[in-house]
Length: 141
Image (cartoon, rainbow, N blue to C red; front, side, top):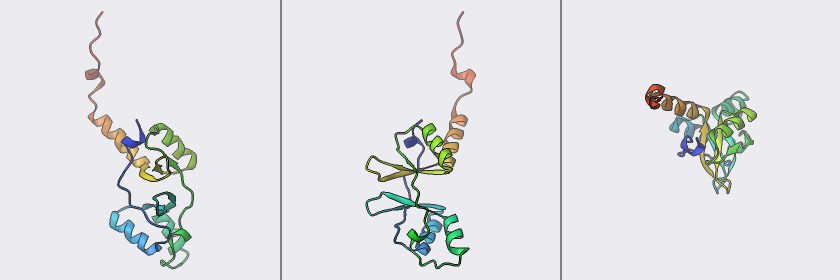
């Protein structure tokens, strides 16, 4: 199975120059807790999570008018849409990430792969697959 079969292609992003408040509203409106932070060319610079906002802004009583770049996570862990999901899972495990950014050869964001998406895809495949007895033809001796 390839990453392109499972990843979300419709991804809400944020600019590093937008305010944390604007990013939080975007998360609320899109019902997400994770935003890739991208430059003007669509290349990921990092990520912003609802946890980042809580721990780095609210808990520290910092202004929500801060730019996203001041509180985002700068690490970018990415895979390619053509990669095997098993390789992406290994990358997630190595970097302790529940989500990976999916980029093209030019480094532009093409989607996001989440552990939850992989699990949902596998669960759906198991529910829709006929029982093993129905898949195999009877053996002839």
